[in-house]
Structures are given as structure tokens and as C-alpha cells.
Length: 109
Length: 113
Image 1 (cartoon, helix red, strand yellow):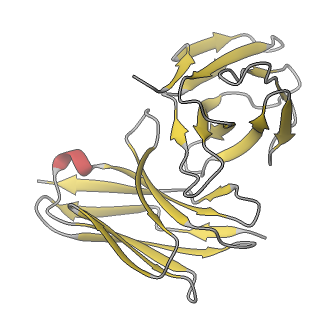
Image 2 (cartoon, rainbow over the protein chains, first blue to last red):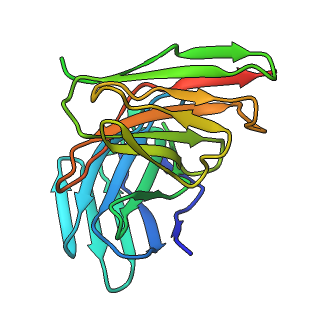
């Protein structure tokens, strides 16, 4: 079966750094996405990795290791507005997105 | 501005009634998708369409139906056969080329009592 695992909830302090991990087992791999979703709203695209390594985009970075079936999203200089759920999704061999359940990130002042 | 619209934002229905959720996009995307999101679970694919007049079942298609008569529109009907229809429904679209990023509408929260 296809499976994507990420922690259910994490707590961090404003101004700090947090790393959200994602491990996956899927039928094929054509890329990995991270989306941000605020409560009651639609997911919005954060990053895409298809090759191993680190992709940096401002305060957010995403890392991929295909051999380990592992990715992480790194958020720096945390702000209160970063309180949201972060969804990991893998594009499988049929080019369909397989979604993790999401990690709820709570930022404390 | 290009984007995806879903209406209404909130929808209430009585058990046993069919209800249709609308989804319109002006991004000129070929592919459109319907997902269901329940608390504590990932997005689950209901139906998707890659071309007009064609669509495919996703993982949880039972109790749902769709149509794709126009490229811009992909309405979802939640039928009375769907045993647990109360959920947050999200429509998305994408191009059929790398990176296959999906763009989402604002969602419709359906409550059936």
C-alpha cells in the first residue's frame, strides 16, 4: 500500500526554527510537495522537490532523500502567522498526489 | 485574476437529499480534482478529470458523481448513497506537465443532518 507519515502536531516558539519530517512509501515517485493549510482554508503550495537535496525559498526550505523515502520542511524565524497545518504529498507513478494527514504547527510567543 | 472558485462556502442539507457543489477555474488547466478532507486525515481523492467529457474514480468515489462538460467546470454531486457526507470538500486543478502542482479552490464545508 501507499503510506505517508508525518507527526500529528508540533509546537515551537516565535523566532525559532522548526523541522517537520515526512517519510513515504509509494508506488513510484515523481516528486514531493509541501503545502500549508490554515484552519478552514485551502492548501497553498510551498515547495516541490524531485531531485535529492535542499531547496531554499526565503524562510522555508525543503529537503529530499529519495533513497531513504524522506523529506523535511524547515521553517526559520518563525512568525505567529506560520501557525497552520503542513501537508506532505507525493506524486506517484500515475501522477496522482498521495497526501499525508498533515502536521499541525502551533507557534507560541 | 486567475483562480478557482467554489460555491457556496457553507452548505447545509437534510439526509436523503442530493446536493451539487460547484467548481470553476479560469487557469486554462486541463486536469481537475475533487478531494474530501476529514479531521485528522489527509486529503482523499474522490474523482479527477484530465480532459473534457472524461473522468476517473479516485479512492473514495462511492456515493459521488461528477461531470466535465466544459474545461472550466467540474461539479460534484453528493448523492443520498454517500453514507457519511459531512466533510470539507476541496476542488483543485493542474496542468499535465511537471511539476503537476495543484491549485486549490477555497473549499465547501458540507453539513448533512
